Image 1: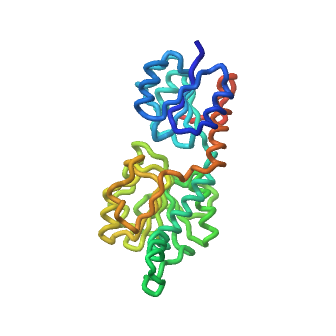
Image 2 (image 1 turned 90 degrees about the horizontal axis):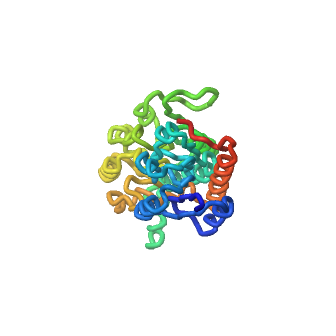
Image 3 (image 1 turned 180 degrees about the vertical axis):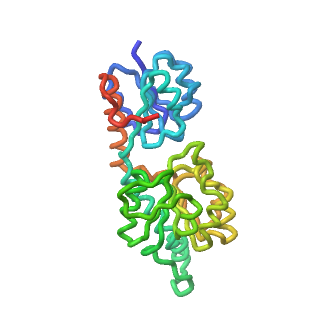
Length: 315
């Protein structure tokens, strides 16, 4: 019997065909939800050699234990927070991701959410459709020359900063350590950056270490004229605290592409017209998705040929 490539995240039929054609000696099993995943592991666990997933879905140690022939796990995008990398690497299982394949798309989307939140585009659209003219509305603030605080200045954060410079925004960032050679202001703690910023943009990885990093205290530091944008992981922001801050006027608005509740929408935020919501599509475009699929295939082929992964995850 042929080995199995198990695909755990949504893919189009065309991309599934591309994957299957890349490794014709494998059976491709598509299991894009939890029930199908469990059934696939139960039926094919002994034959599964490669798993494709995403960071939010991940792959646990318990699942890997049921795949004794597993040699490679890949995340389609950059995130891999729910893949048990330590277990995989301790058991000789290579881990790769799609780092860099959708950075531009995410950065573009982040700027769209930032502008939509600060300028109130969703509210203005709704008012216009209702026949309200500009003289009856409050003046929406500039985006230009606002202070942008980026939480997590990695590859995506750096691309967002590059775009923000085109708006003459003053840029600061908070990482665990300062990066050398950058013209941006470094903040050693998140609260200090939130007090300084007009817009706090979340671009840090998800996982237990960053859960609810943006909490009520951080939102209060950002203040009643401040805006929050999150294109990272929903778990980084305390949703209940965000809803309360916007509802009580302690925060001006937010633009979110990710939520703690996903794929269900964030119920606490749905009635707040100061919050702009998109369904985790920041990294989705024809170009970005194709690049991510191509990267997975390149990682898989290299692995099967005994070559280093194109983009390995370092544990």
